[in-house]
Length: 495
Ligand code: G3P
Image (cartoon, rainbow, N blue to C red; front, side):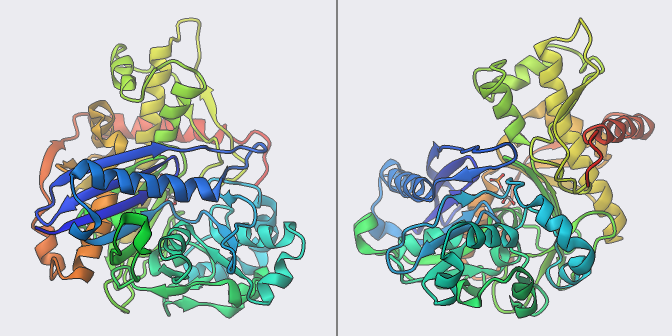
């Protein structure tokens, strides 16, 4: 039997899952780690915390599965994307904290660049000039730590997203590499030519010497240092978590769509060799690649999804654990007219407003915790519905179903609400750990455990299908109400 160790480094937790070649899960280990909020709108992670927590859960997963490193055929890495790190190539010491994808500190810088360069970035990278992506975060690090830009020019520093940082540490500095899916989220990568773009680098004054090499997602990424797990293990894949989930959901044919309900919500449609340019606030991005041939996805990114449930738990203390939200929300028949827009870190697709902030509307003396919990869950559904509606307009392909995964996909109330709003069936697979599964498949392809995507797609199985149960008029009215409250989230009028 072959085992694959999937490392899933997410925004709020590091996870590791051991799969076998029959796609059975043998062990899961998970650790939440510290979120740092040094100023309003800023979000950071300690790079050592990212690495140590990921290493620890990987080691624990092997122990839980009752196997050793010698039993593992390959490791697959998947990760929170865009989060930006810079470190010293000789010592491995990070320059400051990682600036997390949710961080808005470069909003004004992006606004300055937009009119002159917006179109260029859109064409080459498929992205918008928004603080979400890595380039302005990297420029911020180079600007704010003295002498850093000079050291970068001298080749002393290495830039990486989280995948590259993990790979560097797993190989003790032997590999300074990323994959196309992560590179495609930096604003520095030409997704059509599959390479870093000098003209884009110049806009941010970023020296090319800091950049990692770019590989296909399924490739030989070297071996782990022997002391980490007791023996070296082949690293067979790297993929950003959302593209990994698209692969894990077996969305290989153009028009197939998945939505992952994690910290944020990320809906991706496979568009194959066609890079579909959005007219409705979506992104064009690289999908996981098996070789040098570019393949694309259309993406809608919502920044706060599961994070709103965490906020109800940690900041409002109205639930003790995330699972409690469904019971609390179902204790009332509806939200009682309450709408909750969790724009804690601005709004992503399709609005792209870094200055928007969260708001709860429609409070009355009768509003209870249960109404707020229900409104929070419904907000996840509304935000995702906006993405699918935009996709339907952009893609000109009929969307037959939405495949769902991620932690909050277990929530039946949310999934039913989602189907009701969308008017298409919402399909939950047997394995909702699709992010980890996607990178496990990609690593398994490198290691020869599986030989084709067709073989992989045979493992995909349905758990439950949620059919729409309300009229289309009712759904349209709900979406209309939602669009009105979203507009209220930036009363400052800054854009
Ligand atoms: O683009 C950000 C995304 O990759 C984060 O994913 O799963 O940590 O919410 P997640």
